[in-house]
Amino acid sequence: MAIYRDRRKMHPSLSKAFDSVQKSGFQVRYSGIYACIECGVEIALSAGRLVPERPNNPHAPGCPDGGWRLVVATSAPVERPATSESKDS
Ligand SMILES: [Zn+2]
Image (cartoon, rainbow, N blue to C red; front, side):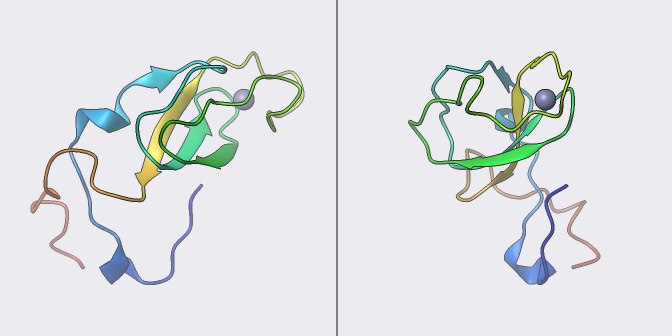
């Protein structure tokens, strides 16, 4: 799980960029932290980079490598932050 210290530096988003799953070996569109949808391990990737394929990615032993989902974008993917989720910031 991604961890942060200062919540003022984070903004919630409803962007569909967080919904798509990238397979290993494919190019990512957004810079940020990606998590494996199976084992949860996280990797940081820059936009345009390829998701590393085995054995160069850090999956947990036995993980079937189902794909990677963006969990934290380092720049706004598309939409502005959702205001309903930022009330406690
Ligand atoms: Zn995995």
